[in-house]
Image (cartoon, rainbow, N blue to C red; front, top):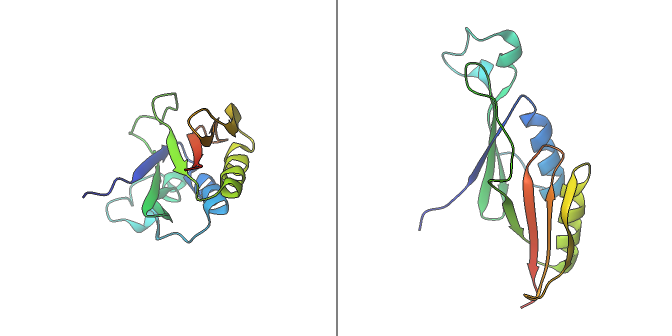
Length: 138
């Protein structure tokens, strides 16, 4: 079966966002590649050359990846079209993840026990990324 990984685009703050995600989920970056280290990017403005072309953080069996959008690419926009869903391995982990991801962001639905026998909550983090945190009691 194919593996589905998530790739996030940011408007110049990918490094800050991924350091935040690393503090939440732990682990080490698999790759941190700046535009300045890539062939064909030497004509870019110096400010863009320092931005991240690619970063990868393993989380469970998946990889969260990201990049900084640079000219002439259109700016990243954030909205309600996508949420990242995290399945915790314990109630305590779900609470820690939810509290960490929602810090400085907006809670859409508080982390609570649900009628479908789970602990579930939704939040948008301080970078505009929507998260759903779930722990099944089954």
